[in-house]
Amino acid sequence: MANPTSNCNNNNVIVFGPTGDVGGFAALEASRRGAKVWLAMRDTTKTVAVLQEKESSFERVRADLSDAASVTAAVRTSGATAAFVYLVPTNDGLRSSLAAMQAAGIEFVVFISTYSIPSNVDVRAVPASSVIAFEHAAVEAALEDLQLAHVALRPAYFASNPFKLALDLSSSSSSSSCLEAYVSNGDCLVDCIAPDDIGRAAGALLASPSSSSSPPLKRIFNLCGPQLLTFDAMLAAIGRVAGVDVHIHHLDAARWVDVMADELRALPRPAAVFLTEYYARGFVSAQDARYAPAVANVRALTDRDAMSFDEYLRLHCRRLLPGVGGGG
Ligand SMILES: NC(=O)c1ccc[n+]([C@@H]2O[C@H](COP(=O)([O-])OP(=O)(O)OC[C@H]3O[C@@H](n4cnc5c(N)ncnc54)[C@H](OP(=O)(O)O)[C@@H]3O)[C@@H](O)[C@H]2O)c1
Image (cartoon, rainbow, N blue to C red; front, side):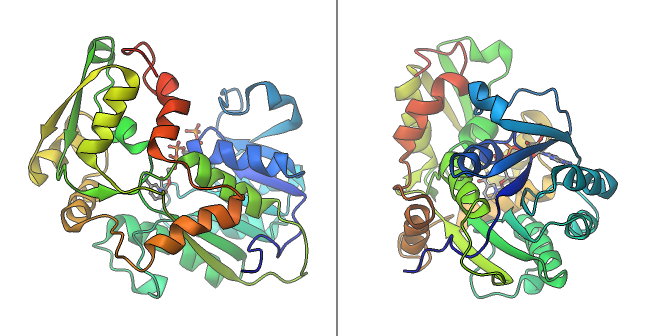
């Protein structure tokens, strides 16, 4: 396979959202590969945990992806030609901000999209009812319409999700030796891809050496973790590594939506409904023709095998569950 990172020359790059799990690793990897990296942040005083002592090699600039004028100013200040971009809520699928960054000098974008967009489907054909896929597809469509060269990284189920969705980490409960977790479809299989691997793939693409002055308009890489686990098995693994009991509440779909939208989290209700439907029909399957290539893409892009869920927990459990049990 040809080196998929060998199409652009991006020595000066800007990462919108470096405080994010993926964005932090994208910044770190692009820097490790020799790029000058600008951290574009809504709040430039925030800590970027993953960069820590390496912070002095990065420059910070203020920007909000939902504010095109701030994007223009940040890109002009940086002089960057490549950008890492998350989906953030806007009413135009990020179109104005992408157009602004293009006008200010960005020639190449790495966008964190989603595996829930089916392969070989025109992004404009994704139905609005598939909320999460639809919102990411709208950004991909905007990039295509703007003729802005880009990579759509389409990861499946993040290893960080149990901590951000299923587990109740409110202060009243997280100091105990038992954690409460809320799932629908506890036997749903997920791939648990580490955000670290997604970020490293993004950073490698951002900093890729030049072999062509005109990169392809669009490349898509599905990305999956190396091991399919049920939700219940993921939560059991967290309990084992953190040294706590995890008490799993198995909820029906309607109740789980209420818990995620109104009680434990503030997930937009349509997104919660989309997720329950996705979980019910199965998230990722080893028989899915996309799965094995998506695991292989991690190695092809990062030069290392995709991290297992246990490895992810050993690296991050203490940070993700401060003060809980053995903490990893
Ligand atoms: N979870 C999954 O299983 C999954 C699967 C496929 C794709 N995805 C995609 O991955 C994303 C989550 O990635 P993650 O876990 O790395 O995210 P994360 O840790 O929640 O970080 C999100 C980042 O976006 C930044 N941000 C938010 N709004 C912004 C704005 N208006 N302008 C600039 N920056 C803004 C945040 O910065 P602040 O510090 O300012 O808040 C933060 O740095 C999802 O939103 C989805 O698009 C997720």
